[in-house]
Length: 120
Image (tube, rainbow, N blue to C red; front, side, top):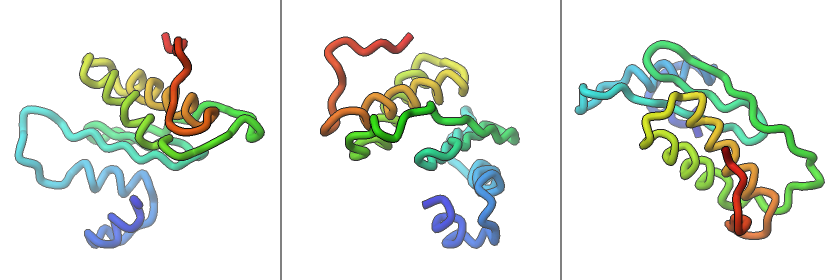
C-alpha cells in the first residue's frame, strides 16, 4: 500500500523509509502537531517516522505454527498504537502496544482477545 501511495503521489521511490519521510513532509492543516507516519509490513519491520527521523521496529517473533487467523491484525495494531498515542506515550511504546495487539489477534480465530490480556 505504501508503494502504491508513493506511486500515485509521484514520489519516484520504492524505498519504504524514503516513502515515510516524503509522506511526513506532505502539507497538513494542523500545524500544532507533527504528523506520525507508520507503515506495517506483516512479518517485516514496522516503519515509523515523526519529524525527520525514520525508525524501523522489528515485529514480535512468533512461531508460524501459532498463527491462526491474520484477519484483523492491522486493525488490532492501530487500536494498540492509538491506545498508547492518546496517552502521550513515546513512539516506541505506541509501536510496542500495536505489535502486542496484532500478535494476540493472529493467534486466535476471528478478531478476539483473551479474557485477561497481559500487556504491560
